[in-house]
Image (tube, rainbow, N blue to C red; front, side, top):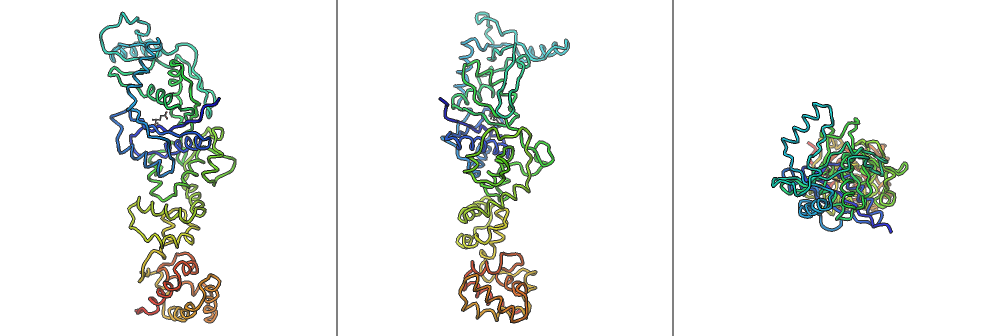
Length: 467
Ligand code: GLU
């Protein structure tokens, strides 16, 4: 019987959360969630010198913002050190590992000699076959007794079979002389103990897989399914780095992309389902599989992300847009806004906004309180004649029913009476209602603002001293 799917994201907490880590997390999450499986989080904090609590927090925040919920508590790898040592001991007892007493100097001398003789510089410990009784009372590491002949094959769901000759792999250290586990041992023990069935991760770990397979073999444990995904590159095809601009998850959150759009975009970064570009979480969960992961590195394309983001903002429930916008404001330290006014404006501001700050710009007219500030450029539309027309419009608006059709009729009639096109009357109206030149349509704004507020804003302008 197939085991239930269990995937994981295992980031090292040594800095900001990289967009590549977010994508790996998303792939693992989609794979598990689409198969009634579990998605686990393990913080690989064994490197005490480089791991920081801030970086762990950044991972938790990044995953939470992206909406990638993990099952159970996050596991701290450092917390499992005793178990790692126990497994190293088990391999020792089973004769699959050995104590090595070679000092750093001796290892260096071995390499020097090998180099001079043109042999492989991979260290071959003289202690590999020395019986325990002949061991000195000295510090030692535990090394894996790795096979010297043959090859290790990584049956990779993305890369195909990758074969590594065993004489290219040395007897790796499992436990250091101070009793701490190496990364290679810790990953295997944790993945085994957490019942991980699928290891989906960046292909910078492909070579590690060969070594990890040797540990699985030594313990007689089942290997997980391996899927090593090509790394993300920048638009120029080079490995993604700071040079390319934003590389941290938080930076994308701060740019104001909704998490749903980010999930959609990241899913497409290295994985495809036919020609589908825009899709929902439910579709992604249904469709995601390892066969759809490409072998070539995907390129980060901000324009594409903006485009998808616009489609998501337009398609999202207005309440979800409002919540995402408020979260964005809180995250970026923006001034608090009137949530009710935002909610009234979202339906007319959704279309055409590619980011949440762009949406806020469109909703600006609803968020400002009277008397609104009229920007210089907009004020140009409020000459004496135009204000006269607005004044004339006022009584009609007082009695019109507050529907789009009726408002269009009233404004159209007044424009016609002056022999003006609708545009000519829309400009002063826009200036009076929003104080700006770029806004949603005047009818959208009137409908959102309501009759009283609309008339009050017109009166503010009509009654003001033009000088
Ligand atoms: N801790 C590793 C990293 O952050 C990931 C290890 C793994 O996924 O096996 O790159």
